[in-house]
Image (cartoon, rainbow, N blue to C red; front, side):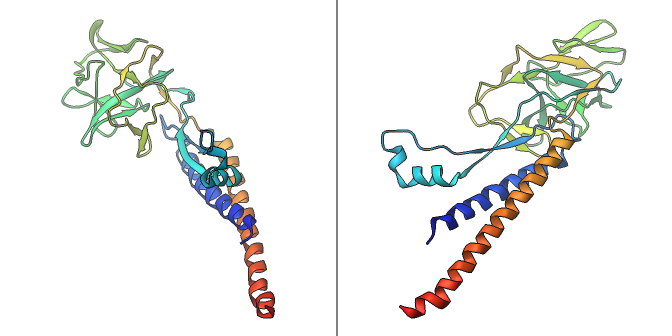
Amino acid sequence: MDSGYYAAMTGLVARTQALDTAAANLANAQTPGYRAEREYFRSVLLGPDGSNSQLGRTVNNYGLLGGDRLSMAQGSLQQTGNPLDLAVEGEGFFQVETAAGPRFTRDGNFHRAQSGQLVTSAGEAVLSSAGKMIAVPPGEVTVGASGVLSVSGGAVATVGVFAFPAGTELKPEGANRYVAPEGVAASASTSAAVHQGALESANQDVIQGTLDLMVMQRQAEMMQKALTVFHTEFNKIATEDLPRV
């Protein structure tokens, strides 16, 4: 079978997956703390015989999509005026306690629950740098760049901002919740600054996301047309050339 068929097929698979990713990015462009996903391609296997192996040739010749990775680029900060809205500038995530266990997010849309705890918009407890729930007494709330939360001038707790070792791939869960890989522990971020009264926007620009979606769609359509050409050629061979043999 013509190798061009395989090239068109793998191209269609890769562009279809990329199209799904671009659609998800655009759909969440207005979600606070959303981390856009970017596709990446596998490269040839390393080793003396890597480029000579069938798998290595397939990867190099047809560009198999390796998957998606989270973009950790900074999103823009939007002022809200809510003293319990917090935004992270730099590397790091807030840690929240959910029914499924600890999760990490850049969405700092917090408020004080009736119980007095600092919680997310979904009612999940926000954890301190010590991994404890944060009780917020009544009074004027201020949060410093280091995450220290004070009420009426007295320090109450430090809102935790956690980072992971370089290369750690967090798993998305929902729109802006992320799960750490098993066995990987988060540590206090040393480069993050907390901004009070602000939320971080998604790090996906709406205009660029729309352009990405259009490009992926056009590329997928091109691969579909290429497959149609090969199918037509194969049918011609089957109906006209093979009977002559």
